[in-house]
Image (cartoon, rainbow, N blue to C red; front, side, top):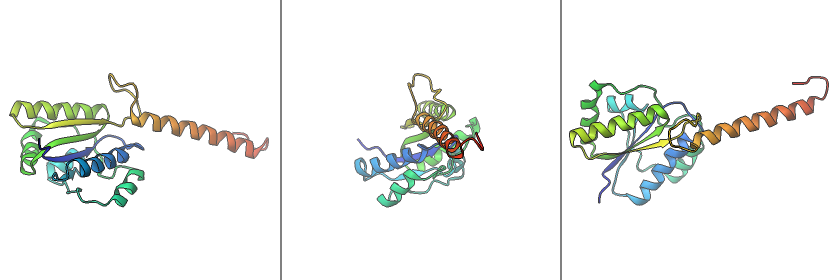
Length: 177
């Protein structure tokens, strides 16, 4: 079974895991589907609509490692929601690039976007597998015990609290926090 080509989109607010998830997807497909091309949507839905989906298949292991540790959103993120008028443009692009697997890294709105893509594909008879990769710091996805972004957020708060306590100790009684 061929996976076809792969499209990856980052969506919503940036978290510490949004690029790590991207790096993991690229690394995995380079190993399990070397015949497939991997495309990244520049700024999410906007990049798809404008046809700006660069081929990221052949980026080096060194670049992938750096990417996973980078802040922000390497592909560029978006909060734009799908509109009914977007469907034809999007599926023309997917078909033109022979994309059969679509990964969306995001939170609640991104999961809704993924469901919309999947339903549209089914109604059109287009063979598409949509995979949502949660990264929300809110930990509010239904039927999810905890999302990768939630742990990152909790770790940040714990480290900030520890740091504030250490600052207070260093300042002594002259400048309490």
